Structure formats: C-alpha cells, structure tokens
Image (tube, rainbow, N blue to C red):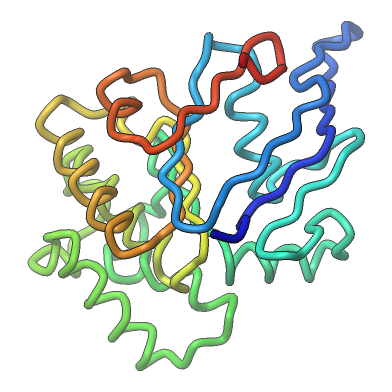
Amino acid sequence: MSNIIEIKNLHKTYLKGVVPTKALRGVSLDISAGTFACITGPSGHGKSTLLHLMGGLDKPDTGSVHVAGQEIYQLPDKELARFRAEKLGFVFQFFNLLHNLSVLENVQIPMMFTKVPKEKQEEIALKLLTSVGLKDKVRSRATELSGGQMQRVAIARALANDPEVLLMDEPTGNLDSSAEKEVMDIVGRLHEKGKTIIIVTHEEEISRKAQRIIRIKDGCLDL
C-alpha cells in the first residue's frame, strides 16, 4: 500500500512572549493510504501541531510534508489553499460552522473554492447530509442543532470535495457519549470505504478503534 503522507524531520517552534517553545523536534513518519490512525499523547506535546502541519494549516521551521506525492510547503499560498480544498478535509473540536448560513450552505462552502457549479453543490451537500443522518436539517441554522448534529455537519462539510485525507482534531471533545458514538460510527463507515483518517484524541475508546497509534511526547515520536 502506497504512502499518502510522508513527513521528514519536521521541526516547529512557537514564541510565547519572548520564550521559544519547541512544539515538534525532528518528527519523521509515513502514513499509508486508507489508514485509520490516531495521534495521542499528553496535552501540549505537539499532537495538534503535527496534524496542522500535515494539513498545510501552518508552516514548519524545517522539514518536509508530502501529501499524495506533493511537497505541500513548496506550493505558493494560493496553490496550497487550493490543494487543501481538493485533497484534505478538516474537522475540529469546536465545529467552526457559520451560524448565519443554513446547514446546507455550510456544507457547500468548500465546493465554492473549487468552482463546483451551484446546482451540483446543492446536490452533493444534500447527499452528504443524508449520509450523516441530517436530511431533515438542511434548512436549519447551526444554532438550532445539538453538538453532535453540528459535528456531523462539520464532517459532511469536510467531505464535500471528496478529499483523499480526513484530518480530525479532537472531534468528540465537546460531545456526550451518545453523540460521540454517532460521530465515530460515521468515521468507521468512511474508513471501511477506504478513506484515510487521522484523528488527534485523548480518548482511549477512540484509539482502540484505530489501525495505528502515533504517540507524541515532548514534540517527538514516543516509540
């Protein structure tokens, strides 16, 4: 099975005031296409930083990240933004839905950046919302939904452009156990269909479902 992600010698330092904090210290790893992987470890040790660098949401100090054969940090900003929109889907702990838009419109947003025709956007968004059990909520606003429903909308939005990789940062962190199960059932079905899924989590229950666990401690792989 070929690698969908290849990371080489990744370093990242943040400044907290005038004090440098090393978030990652020379991380190298490969992830095969179709893998369901969890990134785990103590809080503040670099898990989310690693995920964000995989997804082109931040830039490393040194090192390289290849996604689907493309070295993403060699791309100009506009091309990187387009690459993210086409190849990567993101789901975050706090949903990041636009409350002034309907559920359907929220799912359409990524397709606007890839110039999918409006009629096709609505068709795809409706299909995705149906797949996550929210067909009856397409005209609702995010403020009218429960936390679990909002996260299911976020997953549908992340899948809008059929990305090769789904990156999820603590996707069940704000959910009760029932909503967590709903979200993880969706994740399981996506993995069964061959989607590459990478989740940052503290939840042991989620980690036990993964094919691969990547442990991070003090900004390094904890082997």
